[in-house]
Structures are given as C-alpha cells and as structure tokens.
Amino acid sequence: MTITKSKLASLIIFLTTLILITYTLTSPNTTNATSPFLKYTHFYKTKNKTNNQSPLPCRTLSPLKVYMYDLPPRFNFKMMTSSVNMTGNVPRWREYPGLHQQHSVEYWMMTSLLCGSVNCSDEVVRVSDGDVADVFYVPFFSSLSFDANGRNMTDPDTEIDRQLQVDILKFLRNSSFWQKNSGRDHVIPMHHPNAFRFLREEVNASILIVADFGRYSKSLSNLRKDVVAPYKHVVESYLKDDPPDPFKLRKTLLFFRGRTVRKSEGKVRRKLEKLLKGYEDVHFEAGFATGEGINASMQGMRSSKFCLHPAGDTPSSNRLFDAIVSHCVPVIVSDHIELPFESELDYSKFALFFSVKEALIPGYMVEHLRKLPQDRWLRMWKRLKEITHHFEYQYPPKKDDAVNMIWRQVRTKVPAERLAVNRNQRLKIPDWW
Image 1 (cartoon, rainbow, N blue to C red):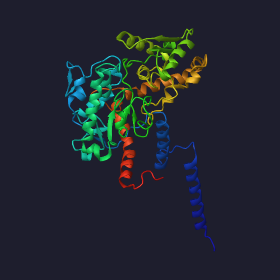
Image 2 (spheres, rainbow, N blue to C red; image 1 turned 60 degrees about the vertical axis):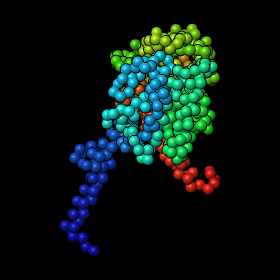
Image 3 (cartoon, helix red, strand yellow; image 1 turned 45 degrees about the vertical axis):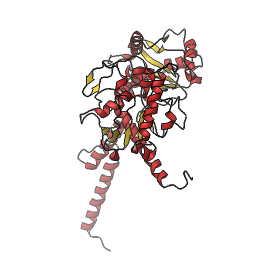
C-alpha cells in the first residue's frame, strides 16, 4: 500500500502530538494549570497530604435516633442537690468535687437528648416513637447513685443504691422494647467502676458506657458492644496556651500529683514514687482532689512537658484527661488500658506509652523522656491543642465534643447488635459454627 506525502505528514503530526501529551501527563515537574486532568491530579495529591496531617473529617450520616425512657426523677435529676439552677429545661450541673464530677457522663448524655435546639447535636436526635429508634437510652444516674448512696459499701444508705437498681431492672423487664431482644439495643451508662454493682450481670447484653474494663468480666463488658467514655476533667481547660517557646517555658520534665495508695494495678504508683525520687526535673507528689489540690495539679500540669498517668484502682483515671486539656503530653503506664474514641484518634500522636515492666526499670522512663527530640514534643503539644475539644462535656453540646463523640461511638455498635438479634430470631441451633 502506497502512503501519500499528505498521509505521512498527518501521521507524523499525530505521533508527535501523542508523544508530547504523554510526556506532559507523566512528567513530575509539569503543572499545566489549564489541564482538567492535571488540576484533579494535583488536587488529589494535595488533599491526601493534608488529610494525613489533620483531624479526621466529620461524619455526614443521618443522626442516631434515640428513644429515651421517661423515668421518675428519683432515678436521675432528683439525686442532684435541689438548689441547683436551671439551664433551659434541665438542672445545671454543679461543679462537684471528686467523683461526682469525673463520672458525670450519664448527666451529659441525658441532657443532650433534652436539648430543644435543632443545632444541639449532629450525631443524635431524640424520637418519641420507640418503633423507629436505633437505640434506647436508660437515664439512670448509676454512678451518682453509688457515690451518693453508700460509697463506702457498708453504709445503710447502700440499700438505696441497691433498691434503685432493683426498680430500674423491674421497669425495663416490663418494657416491650426491652423484651423484644433482652435489651441488646439499650444504652446504659455505667461509668464509675462500682456503678450498678448489684445487678450489672442482668444487663450484660446492653450497650454499656464505661470508663474502662477494669472491674468487668469479658462476658459483661467488652469492646465489641460497649463504649469507653472519657472522664470529665476537673482542672480548667488551658485556653490561652500560645507562648512563643512552650518547650522552654515548661520547666518540669515529668509531673504527677495524686493518690499513691491504690489497689490492683494501681500499686505501681508507690513503686514509681520511690523510683522517681531524686530527679530535679521530676515532680511526684501525693495529693487529693480537693479544691486546693485541683488548682495545684492544674498549675503543675501547665508548667510540665510530660504528665505521668499510672493506673489507679482500674487501668484509667481522670488524670489523663486533665493532662490532655492542660496540653501536657500524657505518659501512660498501664498494661490493660482502653482509651476513648480510639477508632478516630491516634493517641500515639499526642501521648507516650510504657508497660509497667518498662516503667519500673530504674532510669529507663526518665532517660527516654529526656532524649525525646524537641520537635517531636512540639508536634505532640500542637496535636493536644487540636483534639482537646473532643474531651469537653458541656450543655448545650457542641460539634464533636465529648458527648457527641460518645453518641458517634454508640452508632458503631448498632450493626453488631442488629446482626445478633436477627441471627437469634432465625437460628435453630445457636452459634452452630
């Protein structure tokens, strides 16, 4: 076949054009702003790079539909002091000292459902029809009941706490919603390790809101169905922490203030107290959660680079969240701790972890902290400032705050609960595999 000069010229022009286009698209140094493809490619790369350094994007799913039982006030608000002021249609939470404050998640979850504004939460909406609900919330202040009624476990008032548990269980068993699947789709706050202690095994199928798993058997509570919620911090949040050189300004290397006589895994505190004596840049002090003590802890955390968080009677304690809102890099010493919101937050970006065995090696932990590069500490400090809002409890709730994060975690438990319920309804031989 004969190729004419005109056809040959056209072929040469086509091949030349093809080579130029291929080079343009594949060259790493080419940024042709007029090319739609290159615009998209450049945006994609930039977007991915930005996302790797920023907080996770907010979810855009529809809110979790929650039916909240209308319980008599003796199960919740009546336990609070009668002189408490009102904010809207709810009693205002007092700045209680100690455990009342730390384990108040039950109050914040309940009030988030009572909030009348449509802008209260992106994560949850209260529904009046239980047939359309995703989950059912039980507004029983089990932590406050324990703390107010027989906290010493031998007081006559302990009977009040026990009777409240008996009554709430009777109420639930009479509910058609509970009967439908033995309470699998019910959310029950049980944040204090001794909350609901008399009858907790009777509600082990429900979604429990806990501080950790230190006082629970695996048959009662586990990560598959339950939500780990943060303590409410007792020190004030550090809102104006923006010095030119925070690393230099924070003179203390490692800070701890708290009770040193603890049970179980918390016995490590006494051992650490002995090991850390003699270091000029380490502050280790026994103290209590009084008003003066809380202020001393706040000042100490704000002037320290690292804040020690050894286990208490259970693997977690409020100290971790006090450190977070003080922007003091947490040093966590625990073999069994579970952390809030860990499916969304990478704690290794703003905290350090040591096993109990590592922490008890003389000099090991302190030397590790001293050798940590300044630029890495600064990155962790900046990350703490970015994520602090996830650990704030407030009314009305705000976007991505602690209570909204908890409801978001509850949502992730619903599919497993639905799977279990649907399987049980059709299986002839349970768990045949």
